[in-house]
Amino acid sequence: MKKILLSSIFLLGLFSHAQEIRQEDGLRYAIQDLTGTARFRAMSGAFGAVGGDLSALNVNPAGSAVFNNNYASFSASNYNTSNKSNYFGLSTKENNSTLDINQAGAVLVFKNTDNASDWKKFSIGLNYENTHDFDNEIFIAGTNPNNSISNYFLNYAQGIPESTLSNSNYYDLNFGGQQAFLGYQTYLFDPTSAGANTYTSNVPPGSYYQENYITTSGFNGKVTGNFATSYKDRLFIGLNLNAHFTDYVRTTNLYESNNNNPNLGVQAIYFDNEVYTYGTGFSFNLGAIVKVTDALRVGAAYESPTWYRLRDELTQSIDAFSNDGSTTYHDYYYPNITNIYPVYKVQTPSKWTGSAAYIFGQKGLISADVSYKDYSSIEFKPKNEDVYQNLNMANSNLLTDAIEVRVGGEYKFKQWSFRAGYRFEESPYKVDYAMGDLTGYTGGLGYSFGESRIDLAYSNAHRNYNQYLISSGMNDTARIRTTQNNVTLTYSINF
Picture: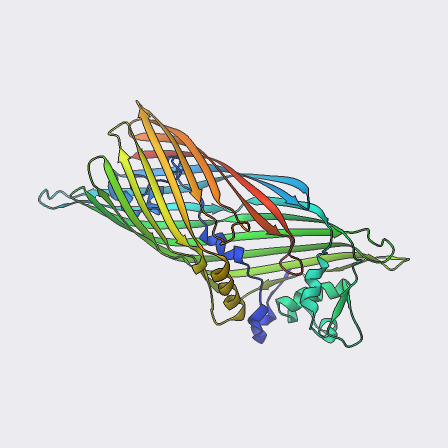
């Protein structure tokens, strides 16, 4: 049975390197996918001034007061993600596809029977959405001309007394000490001299063939409670209270081999990690839609930060194969321990959205949303801990504000509806080579049966970014191009 142990870092109060938190961990919760119903996705989510759709409540909560009748919808999606990587000239590709129920909800509309009142109706809604599907696979391979992944372990070991590495147990050490311990136990390095706190690598210098297979799974989910009302059927205002929950698993299988000196030193390394992150969060939305004329609508909405409480669990193992000139050795260390780290908090950026839509009677509409978000405000807590102070400072220095533009249109012909959309989102980085802009295109159609409707949508989006093979000791990255092709089917009914 796997031994589960609360990391002794927490018990000893040595929290400064208790766990490895990365910048991308904050962005994972701050960057929002295009999700929701098929109609919403087919128009690239440009619904801030349109309303009348359950997923539109995520953009502007006033949209539920646009409904004239009780309404419910149910959506399922196929998520397909393709990742092309290039690492030192070698290109590889990995593809992942999954099917999920991504949306379900209903709105109840209560009309005011007092004709003298200017408040014509109010609505109450409850909606669930899978806001981010984490199922993904990336395969990176190539020959690094200079840097071995053993530098990762060597980097953590420098300054640690050899007696600590030889006399301690894995579970007695903090995160940095554990990484050094794994390298020491598999003879990736030796002390430069007896009693020294410095080390030299046992991996022969030269070039190194490296592979990294990254798999992720899980989801971000959100349950929204909505309230909205209309004033003179011209002003619609609304409020959302959102409960968030996340479940994320990231597994990395890192491999390196070399033929630099076949008769001496470390010839191959296998390093496996699994990080499990789970937790809950809360946010709220405020919004308003104004009918300037019967055809023209404008909207404004505010989305608060999401305040997450998260916990990480980590399991690791390492294998190394080496040669001393006459014998080949297989050294390995499987801690058979899950490190369970203390709870930490992440605050994502707030978001402002301005919207406009023009309704062509019963023929269709065209709409546009522009959103603003400052990614440099991502904040990890407790702020008084060094690891989070450094990360928050890096967020402030490297990340920036970003604009997102969504444009969508719909044309109706008899029972049929035809839809298309465009989406553009700026990079959250000041230097966008770390992560590029996102561009997406969508389309779809719907058929009305009268009281019910079925809708189908297709969305395509792509973005480039850099992926480190390992977090420290070497700065080499693979260039990844991620392309998402998603299909969504929604059934809706008025009741």
